[in-house]
Each structure stands twice: as structure tokens, then as C-alpha cells.
Image (cartoon, rainbow, N blue to C red; front, top):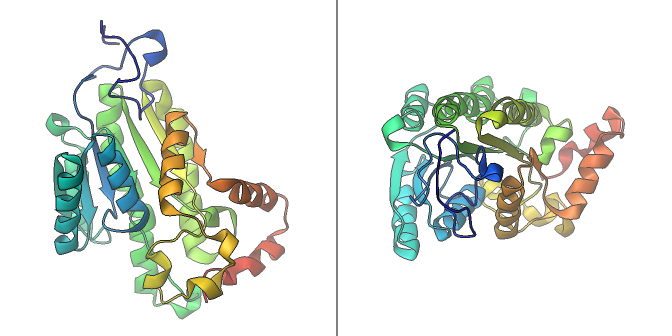
Length: 288
């Protein structure tokens, strides 16, 4: 444990990360208190990923933004740099492509230009049921939702555990608690992986949390050709700004899971006792 003389007050640069040893007045090895922190956010050009990037930038965090659309990525980077005067790198990558995943993992593994927080947000869903989707599309979704989380977390954790501080937020879904095909299965993996990593690497100063949003007002469903108003009741739709703000608060508190709003917390609690056959009937929500 590094021996630091600085005080840990409200201006501490690690406010968003529960660091090893802060309760006893010290930070983990490799701490750079007073230095800007860096977050890498995947799927950063829209929706939850964009909102994470915006809110982190508003706190003074430097950013590495990852998304497929390089033009849009550059526009978002310029927007955030101009608005918040933070450094913003861009890394265009389709995370279904093994070579591009490796490039992002390489950035996370760079010990000389370390990333302090990884937000694994990139993802998409498939509107049709399993047998109605080409297996290539199912595999592509699996690569983005599962393989990318696995590979990027492995790269990030190696550096973070070595330094003694860092954090990962994996954007999962309340679908992880309800049978909804391979999307649900992928998010269940993310939940279990996050829970294990939180307990495994927490003692080494690395916080890991799964964010489990419900239906959120973003581009996600529109890209699937889904009518938001027809697919789920209005009360089920969440505001993305509040969702991310609450997730950051949960992360600061060291929680393993962040489930937004009382209504979704109640739904997840109930899902643990509702028979599987009943939960199966909820598959149509969000798909019309």
C-alpha cells in the first residue's frame, strides 16, 4: 500500500471509485491523486453509453470513446471536449470483430496510459425469437454482449489489480432475471461474472458492478424497429440521465448490482419467486 500524505476530502479525484485503503487514509499502489482520471466507454455515441460519457466528462474525467461509427464518434468526442474541456480519445471498433476487440483490449492493457474505469456498455438486441434469427446474427450478438465483456474486462482487470485501484461497470439488464432467449442468457452471464469479479478483485482495490436497466428511453428499441408506446406500458420506461446518475451513486457505494427505480427493484424481487412458466409469458414485452 502506498504511503500518501494527502487528505481525502470532498475534492478527492477518486470520488467515483472506491479505492483500496481509502477508509484508512491511503490509496492503492499506483495512485495518482490530483491527476485526472480516465474512463473507457464502449457504445459511447448513443443512449446509456453516451450518457455515461457525458456525466463522467462533467466530473472532469478524460475519456476513451469506443463505437462502430467513426464519424459519429468524432462528433461526440468534439462535443464533450468543447463542453467540458476534457481530453477525449476515439477508438472506432465493432466489438463483434475479433481484431477490433483486440485493439480495444490493447488500449485497456496499456500500463503507461492507464484506464481507471471501464464501462462495458456496447450492445444490441434481436427482435425475433431464437429460431427466427440467422445463427450468424445470434453469434454476433453473443460476441458483443459476452465475448467483448470477457476480453475487455480481462485486459482492464490485469492492469487495475496490479495498480491496486480501478473499476468496471458492466451494463447488463433486468432481462437477466427473466427468460428472454439468448439476450437474457447473455445478460445473466454478465451479472454472474460481475458478481464474481466484484468479490474476487474487490480486496485488490477494483470495484465491479452490473447495471441492470429496464426499458430506457434511448435509440436501442428504435434500431430494432420497435414501437416504444406499443411494446411496454409508459410507466416502465426510464429516463437515461437519471438511470446513469443513480448508477454512478450505486457504484460509489460499492454495490454489486444497480437496479434502477423502486418499480424495477420490486420486479426483480418478485421474479425470484414467480414460476418460470409465468415469466416466460413476459417475452413479448419490448418486442412489438
